[in-house]
Amino acid sequence: MPRHHQKSSPSGGSTRSLRVGELVRHAVAEIFSQGGVHDPVLETHLITVPEVRMSPDLKLATIYVMPLGGRDEKLVLDALEHHKRFLRGEIARRVNLKYAPDIRFRIDERFAEAERIDKLLRTPAVQKDLEPDPDQD
Image (cartoon, rainbow, N blue to C red):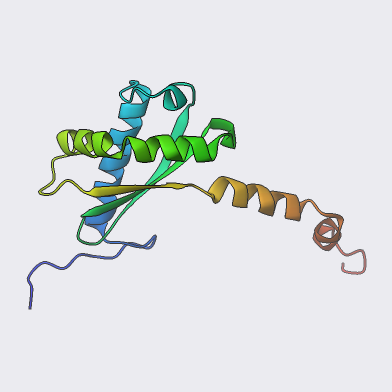
């Protein structure tokens, strides 16, 4: 039986994978903010990196990105895929890991989902349910 157990956190994943994911997220955000990737598409877009999810063995990093305003998502994703090898090398240089994780990029859908829920909460049917009932004292 192994002596070291990785504890699961409430948000999923081990503490170690969450910590490494944060380190990778900071490294990627720093690369973007310093203009480290020379690409016309990436240079004209501000890109947010809200989350990086690491696989349990820390060999795969799924990097969730969102261009400011949610515009040109496909163009930005294609540009990131084109520069994947460079970004992987930069991450390996900035984050001290045994193996440089393979990276993949995904568009973060949480903003769109939050907007959808917000619109749903503002519908008349939901607002009616939220009004206080005059029959109750």
